[in-house]
Length: 398
Image (cartoon, rainbow, N blue to C red; front, side, top):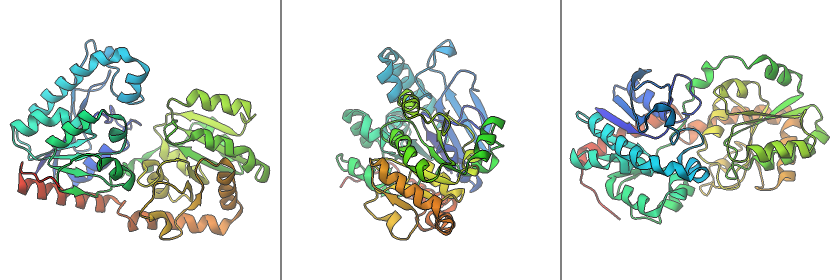
């Protein structure tokens, strides 16, 4: 079987921090005997054609000279367009170049797998022209931020949809989408965590001197509430003065986070690392992991990475209507948008060694219980591919 994966976010070079998801899906498929080609936008300095860990990569050029390719990557296309509306002029070129590349990549393909709704639209000429089944994975951000007409066009083209969180399913239900819908966990590339080298000396020494390292890894945006994490730090420090707080990530709230650290006098206790390619090294240096979203935590890549590394997790009790985190004592749960309750939850875990050991042991159990292992994800993707290939371009709407 030959599967063409279409995405707007893929590693531009080995170890690139930009890709937390696609390689985690593609590599296990290759190891299972599937031929996988990834089609993604080009970026300055990246190769046009290469093979990465058995995955063939085709990157399409959408601006010339290459230094003008600034629409994809960075903070993501929606954020780039909102910050710099002039970048809209690159959008038609990106769509047309992407469609042409997908058409060329699918000459001998059996199926197209598009991640995010815009890539289903980019894949439409190849899917329709070559009569190939098209599986669309929606990840929430596309349904929340993309225009409704674009999402509707994506669902008209797709022959199957992957949606693995209840919060995303609520957005999906606003549309008419093809049947079947698959609940497949799209886990991040967990293997790369083990391959990360040591932290740089200054950060490593800062962590060694800490009584405990409380870590937050996410994009710095309201959807993840990094400012609430920082606001919880003073209350934690009153009970645990040796604690230190790592904030790893970048995004639109970066400057607000820096200003808040200064206003609260936390410059010695909080380290904002920016975007990191060595999340595994950061997690190994951590004592407790915190996820502070006011919207949803289920399926979050950063939480899965922390659990894969055996860290005790403190998270806000939101976006979990199926009660996955409540079925067993997997995590320490706190109220959303409540820095004081977050501080109390962190403090409970830091103060109780037995509690930390219990949550660390339950982290791996959660991954196994809820399908967030590489073997489970790969098997379910293969089952979906085989079903859609048998059905071809036929489709049924509810």
